[in-house]
Length: 294
Image (cartoon, rainbow, N blue to C red; front, side, top):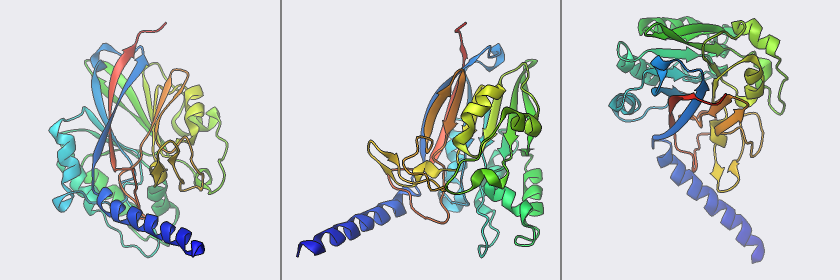
């Protein structure tokens, strides 16, 4: 009978994952980081940012209100959205309900800066498959005053001092499964220009290019895309990324490259594989402080 034990145990383990996942997908969590930036202007000492990524249309709470309510209980200075806030796939209707509920709640209260992920980019790249979707997405962001950073930068100003916030929109070659495309500093220059003389915060949906962005001059890099590895195991981390990387150190968390800090969100939602296990949906809060090192 031993040959029946292992399949039975595997089936039981899968059942436990599915039951827990169905609850865990709605259990919002908050992860806090402190980021030290060299020569951070005094106006931004102790500034708090919130970073959201990979919502994929997930609803939290009644009418999707819980996510915005969580942010507004302790409002950050800025909300940064790192892409894939919608799910864009053939055979799935265009659904902006959860995204709109968040943008509407934050509109006029907290500035929102939004970079594109591979799902938002897909609407524009394949208009024959998603007719009118990208235009409707643009209308939504315009309606609620979102600052859209599509290979673009914007300045957040306070007391005459500035932070530069940029969004790098990645070509689909950077999302190929089973491989990591090389990126050069000149590729970043082509997207958003050279780094400047104020702190640089860069949103780039894939987390694989922190070293390149460090060489470019980024102080803080914000990424997502890997959904925390979907299923996380003790001591091993995230099991698999959307690009079929197993137990990647880039699935979630904090990395450092010289003076650059990269923070990788475990994401908020799911799409093709509707599972989150030991991997609660994650709001990231970031406190900025000045790095006093010479």
